[in-house]
Image (tube, rainbow, N blue to C red):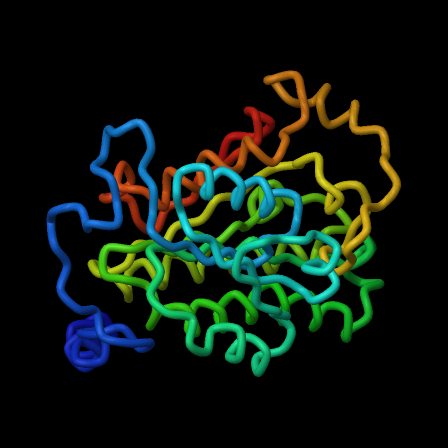
Length: 281
């Protein structure tokens, strides 16, 4: 059977010559005018789209990017956008709805980067006790939704730009009760690596996989509610972390911006694990 592999590769070559979501275009080896050179104090982008930009990490990312002179387009659920007033461009999106994803990206215009922070977690339960519709909803939102967002975003990402998916430490450090979410985020990492191969060299694709971050999502939120859940005791998370504390949104923002910027110009298909040393894949 091994003799068939070269033939299969030859048959696939024409299909892989260009990415399925748009032409690769030409790539300059020099920084684009919209980006400051690597090594400068701040590597600002002209324009950035953030899916899930109204959440805890999203708000911190948008604030940091704007402080560096970047025009940010915030995409999120309508309720989340309403709960977090923002003066910049806002677009309603729901990763469970492919038609809404298409509308959110319709006429977006060129961007230097796209960050997908959106996520949905069902109530914790053993996989054997998880209803089929719940499993389907989590996978469709977190994994199929991420793939659909990637397809919709690709035509707008300038050559030399980047896409960053935010996965989860649960993709590697699996825990009981988190089955659907862990499965979806592990799939997102495979999606990231696939797109990195298919979109190179025009667009880089990487992932950031945080551990527990002190946001409403950790404190009982599902990722589909605007209001924070009641605060819970996070001391156990901190005690289990070599760095001795919980992660905060800003701890995740730095790696995201690094992957978007010119200092990561030769980084694609990679996962940055942000967990304070809690586990080491």
